Image (cartoon, rainbow, N blue to C red; front, side, top):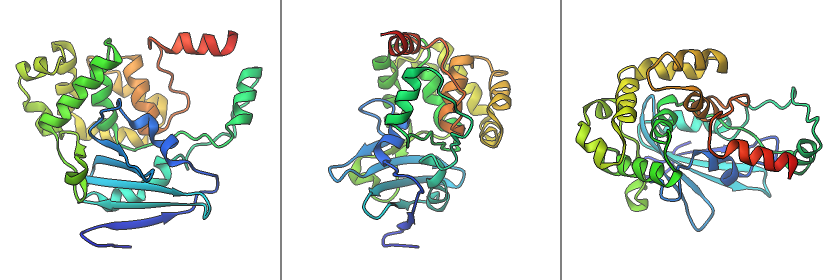
Length: 261
């Protein structure tokens, strides 16, 4: 249904207790991510670029009623409202998971409602993943923040008041000069990879409809896209539970600590 000031609304009833902030957390690129906000009321706000154009999405859980309330503004509002169930994990399937290790079994018992969401938006995950290659999290988040603030746009509707932004579109990415990338602390190898993927952005967005293995095969045909970057995209854009960020600085340490103490 429609609200005021171009607002569109949707109420969705998941069949599990869906905690919106936890489900959305993997999409946040650091504490200062200009495309992501959580307000004092616990609502999660996102500025996103859909196939139909930019949109602002606001999500709020109502645990007592078992509902999620969504509002959206902008040309992509209808698309982003349709994506809400998948975004929060409705398409995630635990039926084939058998936790054989005691630590995994215990984790599953304590967190039975964890779901992996999918955005259906490849470039939205791919650009920050490239920026995050082979640098510290602090440096990566700063580079992404500068890119969005300098070359992105204000999110529709309440976006201006919230200082919420949308990532730059592929056409803009293709025109950013090399010295501007360096000012954002993004070296030539990473900026070249971003410009390369921006040239084939339309084709890349179609990967969201493929299975994880085929999406990875096609992603990795592009220069600068390796196993780690592909996995980061598959996790967020496709909701792929089998995408592991091999080579990540923290993964081996965290998994080893969790399993062995």
